[in-house]
Each structure stands twice: as C-alpha cells, then as structure tokens.
Length: 133
Image (cartoon, rainbow, N blue to C red; front, side):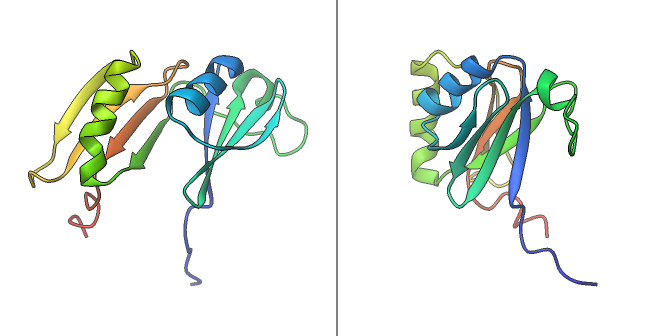
C-alpha cells in the first residue's frame, strides 16, 4: 500500500464568515492565503493550510459538495516556551478558555477554546502524540 505523507489541508465550517475572518486573522494572527466573499477563507498555518468555509454555501455546492454540521476540532502546536504566552494572550483578548489539560507527562499541555462559530480549537505543546506510538 502507498504511504500517505501528511495532511495537506484541514477544513472547518462556520456560520459567520466575517466573524471568522476577524478571529483567525486578528486574534490568532494567521496569514490569509485566499478569500472568496461569502464562501471561504484559506489560511497558512506554518506549511499547512486551514480552509474555513461558510457552511450554508458549501453544503449546497454543485461541484464537490462537502461540509459538516456541528462544531469541528483543530489543534495547533506551539513551543513549550510560547504555551504560557498563548494562554495569557487568549485571556487578554477575551477568548474564553474552556479547559486546560495536563497530560500524563507534566510537560505536555493543551488549552481548549472556541471560535465564534463554536468550533473547538486547541493549543498544545509538542510531543503529545509521539508518546502514544
């Protein structure tokens, strides 16, 4: 069987595209790659791409319709050093932290929060999945 190399893109679906653009561009500081008014926003996350679709529009697309109902989940990895800075930054920008998890090893941490459409986002320190292998 051929081997899959990586996840090229990840998609989230939102109810309010302007609110999503403000959140992902201004609060999370992601660089905008492409935008189609009323349909989608595409962002760079390192070398990966985050696709944000306006759910009511993409669920009705004639070509390759896709979508999801209900909140999605996406995790961003940050360095150990930046983890605490992100926690303070989100709080300062009035982003409610839903939960913080300290995994079995004390150096592995995650904070969870929601975007304006209710998608559950996570900021995690490196190595969480490596120890499960």
